[in-house]
Amino acid sequence: MTTLSLPLVFHPIYSQLTLPKNHRFPIEKYLTLKDAAIKKHGSKVNVNLVSHPISTEQLKQIHQTDYIHNFLTNKLTDKEMKRIGFPWSEQFVSRTLTAVGGTLQTARLAVEHSVAINLTGGYHHAHPDFGSGFCVFNDLSIAAQTLLDEGKVNRVLIFDCDVHQGDGTATCVADNPDIFSLSIHCEKNFPTRKQQSDWDIGLDKHLEDDHYLAQVNDALISAFHSFKPDFIIYDAGVDIHQDDDLGLLNITTEGIYQRDLMVFQLAKQHNIPVMAVIGGGYQRDIKALTDVHIQLINAAIDTFIN
Ligand SMILES: [Zn+2]
View (cartoon, helix red, strand yellow):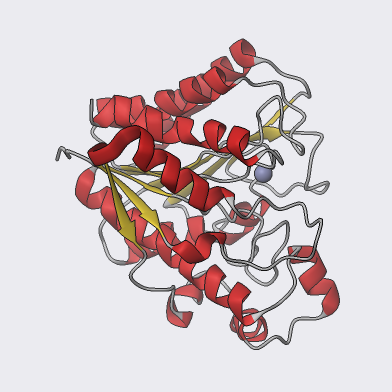
């Protein structure tokens, strides 16, 4: 099915989180990205507001009941919250449930329209029974599992190109043969202790565009031909960028556009629906960071709309 405008999923709460002064997380970026996408692409993008926060029942498909309950009721320990990296608040709970609901809504829109993007998401450090690295619930695994349970898809590739390993995703979907987790990350980066995805590619520090894009291309094509997915979930983290505070790779803005284009073009060529989340990106200059994240939207529009 073709589509005339690119479905984006957003909610103002994505950027509403009161953080301690000097907290490193660029929480404003979701709102600035939504505004920049509308300014640049006008009617070629269609912004859908998140209609439902994720439900406890849906969380239980992937997460342990005690962990869900303790997070919702502020009963996680200080140590557990510290590992997540944000202070607990009602607002944080609300934001978390809305953001994960947004990823599921994006998955459903992608089934319907071939492509859709959530303007947040990519909580790949969330494990079944604990959160870590700014991630509470694993939206990628929940979306994959829900579509499978509903019989909408049969084989899901989670293609994770964030600079950090998708360790939580690896453990969340380890026992599911219908979900293939592929993580391409910088080996010498968080998390120190890696988990085993279905396929892990640990890149050297300071890698540049040509070598990076060649590895992404090889991985994508090999996974595609061996696993034969009928749905792709793409974590388009931009913390691979040369100016990123947490990255360690040397990828340019053009390199990110080319990577995103590669994923969308493969999906289109084989008529497989693809959804993306924006993933990590930690430059403190929000305007510069927005300009890197918008490459995902540019690549989707150039593939599916223009
Ligand atoms: Zn990351």
